[in-house]
Length: 133
Ligand SMILES: [Fe+2]
Image 1 (cartoon, rainbow, N blue to C red):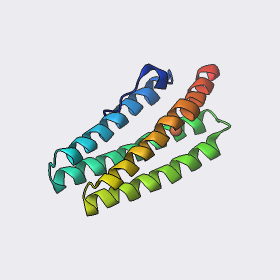
Image 2: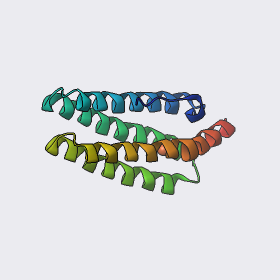
Image 3: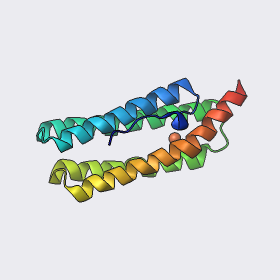
């Protein structure tokens, strides 16, 4: 299954949506590397890219929140912190142990958490930013 930013996941904020699109792309690339046995190097580079991209994306969202004094900033940032930490742990395990079925299902589950976060919290943020203008 490929992840994609379907209409119902669009927040309406150009930057946030384009980063979510790239983020899903990065997940798909990692999954591809895992499924067709492209070897350790490919898994490691795509896994690193995903982790870096998530950090960059979270920082961009948090910068927007700070700039516009978003009232949900603290809890949103807290979610981001915990999320990235768990993602890094999962990715580390994939790099170290290889892409086993249990760890890939953990990764899928964790991406599902992000999809929910996009659907609720990021949409709320985008709406706030829209009303600010
Ligand atoms: Fe977010």
